[in-house]
Image (cartoon, rainbow, N blue to C red; front, top):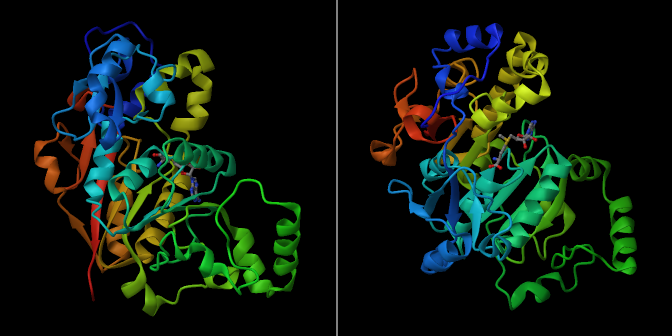
Length: 393
Ligand SMILES: C[S@@+](CC[C@H](N)C(=O)[O-])C[C@H]1O[C@@H](n2cnc3c(N)ncnc32)[C@H](O)[C@@H]1O
């Protein structure tokens, strides 16, 4: 931030910042944080070419592999590299939340609030040709955007996407991944098995699927409707499964062994850590800010939702697995208070240090081991990050 401006902040917002120990100057500076992009690993050789085309320097972010910063006013959407799927826009703090998960080859990862999908893309990119990613979000249009993003960046091969409520989502990862040769043979002889994904199904196939839906039990129909599969990649493990196999509910005893290796809960929040978001209220009207950010009732219902998302994500984690909880709010209520309450309710949850964070430009949260990114300290958007491990007890 180079220049502070005269952006007037309403008294109620200033009080809110004071209560949360936040410095108002991060909201009033007109020159905002840099823009960040992540280059797909296969595209890092093209940095100079991309710089020539965009007529600006891509500064490597030393503490975050694959990330580059650009001046805030640069539009990336019109660049060839963006259109060709060589890079995508994602804030460095969001990248740090994904790094905190420490995704490794072969992991089965659940992203419980996945849309529009920047973090999901990064997870899929890190996994490459192993493991799987399951993305869940309650907003169908945002999830459709997530599907478009995955397809644009050719990262969907091992992904499946569900429109579902993350507080009740209950499907475990599919451990078996058919290789490309056996994809077709996996569906042979199984009438209602999932075939390879196509956005447009022939009429005959759609009719057959509707008929199959009518004959399956009402419990399965409910599961299918509440956890609607809207995309799956060729090697996501879905091809060849029947509906009843896919929608098999998990019992608690199975989760400790067959649950996800890593879970990301990037929860719904008031977005007050996103400085660009807050600055938009100058045009939208500060009254809207009162309703959307400052309203105590809204905060209470959000913290209850955050706790339920975190708890359900943790339930689906296998023993020894890790979960990252993040929000783009900087309030104590939506972060440290949620963490504290969650730890009280879950004896098998242990708060963990994020190893890489020693070299990150962030602060500790009010609870040791939690992290806070903010524009003044980190030159990123605001983000809270906490990491947990599931212990065997
Ligand atoms: C901060 S955004 C997630 C951003 C996303 N992780 C990314 O990197 O693009 C929070 C998301 O939570 C979703 N959400 C809200 N309530 C939910 C619920 N009950 N279950 C699942 N997702 C929910 C919202 O639709 C929104 O897309």
